[in-house]
Image 1: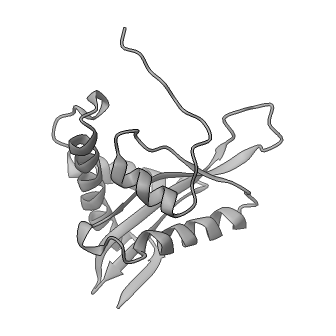
Image 2: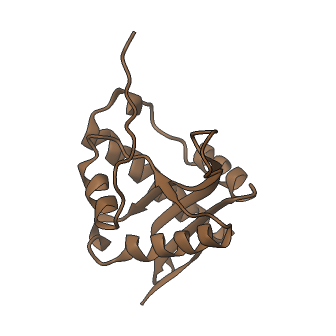
Length: 158
């Protein structure tokens, strides 16, 4: 039976493993130069995650089966990108990953539901995220949950 809950200290190693799978997946799917990096150190990722875990407004939820982390979603409360907006703060989903064998089983939907509940508890009305243009798998997953493109970011090599 699958369990969905806030990440505990015991879950961090599992989330680190999945985070590394996520960035390698994006690297391979998009072939984007931003994801041209050397091997990620689990220790470095774990230190960053532990730092973020203690930060006000940051949260990670996990899905577990038989005690093993099979998916996660991380989010935080951020300032709205447009300072003149009446919307001052938004919920920002910074990363999420579901192991391939658990996709299309509503795992992301359940995790996103926990995240939206958290954002609502913080008085927020919007959830936002970024997805790489060539990350077709990610785009399809988020669109299936009702996310729509509302702005686009561009870049140019110089």
